[in-house]
Length: 216
Image 1 (cartoon, rainbow, N blue to C red):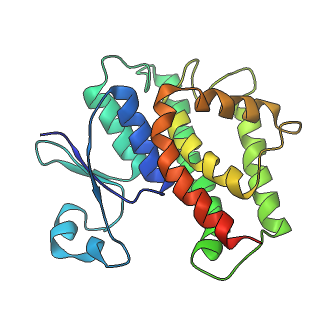
Image 2: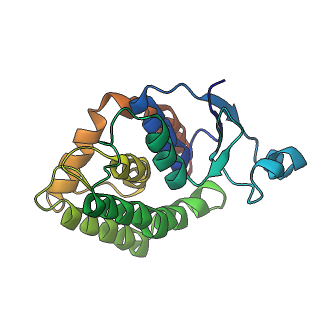
């Protein structure tokens, strides 16, 4: 049986997993989790993931793993035909890991801070502080891309998949200024041209529609 992905469609973290699976040619059984109804708090889900978070992956042998960064590196390590998406070279892998931790510790929390009051609250505009926070992210990425077309390696890697899922959402809220951040703009276009980027589109469209319906 194919691996099962417990998910919610708009989630950037889920989309990172879907992009990676698509790049690997891996068909996942996708199971939508109704967070509003509390499906993630039911005993059967807590048995799989005591932290009750999505995405959560259950492989065909019953092994479960959660957190998108852990999932995508696991999928590549187990199912990829080579190591190009997550190179074994120690320094390259360390760089990719740093980019993954950057997405986890900096990009996603900032995206959440901007988007959550709009999605679940009554906020209808984006503050100058939030715009500055997004621009700081773009500035870091611009530096990461100095001399490189991709975020963590000479070719596309899981770092790009993880970051583009969040950055594609962040730019809905605060667009990338191509004049100020030309490398980021080019990187984003390069990601959009990847066949596997198609796996990001449905969830991103849902996210975009929610945001645009709330913003004035």
